[in-house]
Length: 638
Image: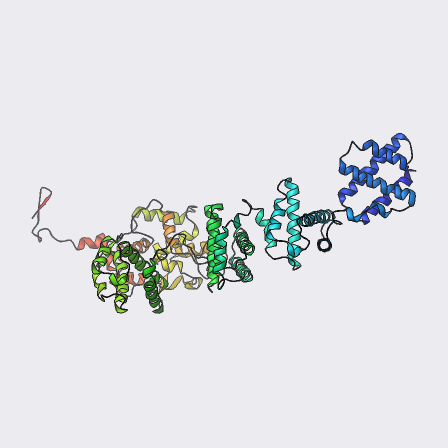
């Protein structure tokens, strides 16, 4: 009878395997048959329907309800095989299963979804099948009978429904919901935003990315009737931004940040029927700012600013520095904005550099804000007294700085007179020059500082990187300006002849300079050991993506890293060039040769370096006797 009983159980197991029952169900059937066999052996009886019923009755209170239901189903199938040789269909009522309770539309989608994931492990498919059917069943309870009727509100409720479950059960629910929504989108039955919802909700603070007041959303929606880009265009911009970062070899952390931020922003727009525009981005950033840390907020703002660049038909400038403070132009009073804009357009049309335009813009805005605070509300009423009061109260650190601003403001006042915006065409004369050319002493590095730098160059000092050492040596041993150092390219160096050929950024004068061995070695070490691999021809590039030419501040930071205790106001990296020139003069190098080494076209600019050369200064000393001066007792008398 043992062999006969084993045949019966094998027939039942073959049947449930053909039915694609789960691994858990199969294990329950195995436990059932093992326990039943043990029971029969202990009693010394053979299998009969009556004995199986007695066994079920004896264990009913010893196992949980789920196991008992499965044991009962296993025994019923075993009885069918024992009595009829096959399993009758009456034991399986599909309408009573969770899938059987679904409406035809959901049942069809469920079947297609299971076929779509059929390549996954059997247990995984079974779990997703049950989870998917449960989700659809909850939709039906809310009166939803088609996937086209599913809304973001329904999905949010479905996501929240798992709040009370265990961590494992919650994860399974979220995974199945995510897979189902992705399948619906790929089948053309749901919008793209549905696929982003689960990941967005699993972040902290729930739906923090959708906390904008309804009245603000309505205001944005109404203002976009004639403007804004569709969300499909936004997705193309997002993809272009991602690829640009990939090409510039940004880290995976940055790439994930782009995906996360743009997904949240897209989801917000899609949920609220908004199209994309920079104004929507600014409003959204303001609404999520309370939920973000300071550094995280900067990442959000950077991505939105880059998208705004592309929206304005500009290419992405990944190394842009976006200002997070209110500019003077934004604070400009409305009454003077048209005239300021008109003047700036004229300057743009004249082909001035962007830095010059910015200087004009800031100077004029500063002037307009000040006279507005003084009570002037029209350029027609602007008087000479108003301009003089502005000049008295406008503070600057140096006379040169004040004159630089005033010279731009005079141009603006002249424009007002020529355009008949002001009644007095000579107002610009009321703003005087406040500084004249002056000669300043040349500041150089001290002997101790130069010795310290030489020691750093020769030793492996970890506090100063190879890039910084190479920059400092180019300035100290060759007198190259910082603008030319950061602009140095691979093509500028002739390694065979130890020469550097550059076109000076300041004068546009081309010079060919001999490259000392220490400088060549420093450049070689930096290029081979520290410089990131990049397509850029610039020698000095950023340490992190984007691997582009470093900014001007890199040279100053190199000097600061090497001499951290040095604090000389008004003395930056240019001190290395001044030290180089002064050292040449102290070593009796002719002035003409010093001028050539510095790339000067004349001798006038070199003479200022003689101001600290003590040997030559002593030759110019005047006799006290010739000046009718006498010294008595250590005191000078006239």
